[in-house]
Length: 261
Ligand SMILES: Nc1ncnc2c1ncn2[C@@H]1O[C@H](COP(=O)(O)OP(=O)(O)OP(=O)(O)O)[C@@H](O)[C@H]1O
Ligand SMILES: [Mg+2]
Image 1 (tube, rainbow, N blue to C red):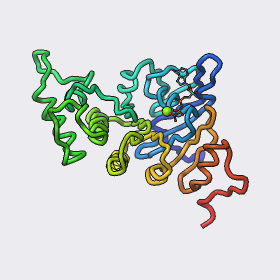
Image 2 (image 1 turned 180 degrees about the vertical axis):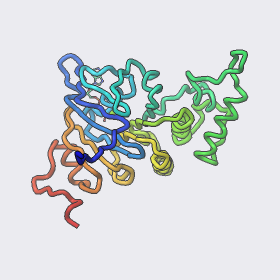
Image 3 (image 1 turned 30 degrees about the vertical axis):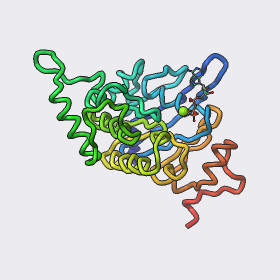
Image 4 (image 1 turned 90 degrees about the horizontal axis):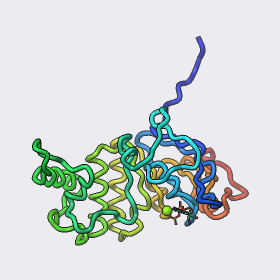
């Protein structure tokens, strides 16, 4: 018998992805993968290509080249709706919600619940939204107000509730706390860990080293469109990660941190 060690299949694998805008190489031969219950940090300077890479996975941007696999099967994404079919949802830093609508309308935006007569089922959407939001944050109030009246943290709770309600398997969080204050940042970080505990795989774009080292299992560092390093978080420290972000290389004297206990 041939002795083979079965390697688990990643829930997402992006392989040799390129994205060019004319002569600008925003993403250049980047490969990343993600397993259930993992938080993978996607790090890099402004303009490194993080959002472009993740927008390719969210179906918002077409890659110039490369392949995407979900549970080992190659898929083609031509829209965010396509990505959602595979359980891929995105949460943005800009707290992208429809400002004039309330929490329930935002939670179900584009995926409204209907009665059997085909009308909007406002009562059910309200009840479901209330349950989903309160489960994440028992203090969630203002359910009937337009979300423009809500705090940044409450708005992110709606975005996270939406992902959970629609059973996201893969969550892309593009600087989810960049527009939040410290206590709201802590709340969103806690929610991120709860999502991870439920087996959701998360790509987290973040500039916050504290969050990165608190939340991530692995990090991928991008520099000028390229993946300049993928590490388990225990194998690197903040200086290593900063060096990769700034110079695109590890410090000259680097040895794997995890091996020297
Ligand atoms: N739609 C677009 N058209 C042309 N160039 C673009 C477009 N989107 C992004 N770019 C360029 O691609 C490069 C990578 O951008 P990207 O938004 O992925 O960076 P980022 O790593 O997310 O940066 P930040 O930390 O500032 O969000 C940048 O040079 C950016 O100007
Ligand atoms: Mg970005």
